[in-house]
Length: 286
Ligand code: PMV
Image 1 (cartoon, rainbow, N blue to C red):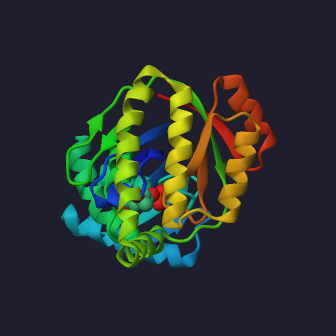
Image 2 (cartoon, helix red, strand yellow):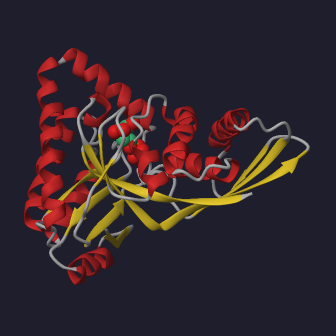
């Protein structure tokens, strides 16, 4: 049993999506995680380049998947991830989707996404579901927690992604944001504003209004800073992207490490910036 699933990037609305605000994420279809499952004498996981603490969670996810699909026998799961791990590109969601796709008879993305969300909980605690939705449907989504994803049109465009390296686990960052909101209720305004930004960005993405998208990204990043989820390394990358001509840049995913995303007016500019910024690449989204 083999399957694969793609990476994702959140363009707008990480964290606020946890509290019912809309968010926008896109699939990176060319960046994939592959799995292979075989009958085995015991449940086993082998992962290329993943450390032992992760493999425990992967094993727990595998057991849940076995239960979901009434698999009476043990399984050996082999993972080959083309998605960099722990950097906000959705490797755990892709793993959850790929394992579910490999085991389930139904290839219907909504069925796959619902089952994969149970596995994703092992990694993220209380995920909003945006990551598994994008990975299962491989379409850009306007996502509101608990609702069916709305598929949106995006004028194809080039963005830059850069990885700041080591990251705090998503569930820890999400918990820290929750505590911060409890201590400082005025911050709820930032959550609402991020939702409004995502709603405005939806129209700008459809039109391909890159200038507006850039402004919205910068604004979204301001609120993410207020929530305390940026980091000096992320800020350094955002600075480099803006200095290289990006029209806007922000962190993507849970933050406190992980990736940034930046928009450029042209493919050539995005590619030229990617050559200059360490750990960066340019990718077309559609
Ligand atoms: O850590 P990532 O890149 O999978 O992104 C998590 C996004 C959050 O909004 C912070 C959490 C969630 O469950 O949506």
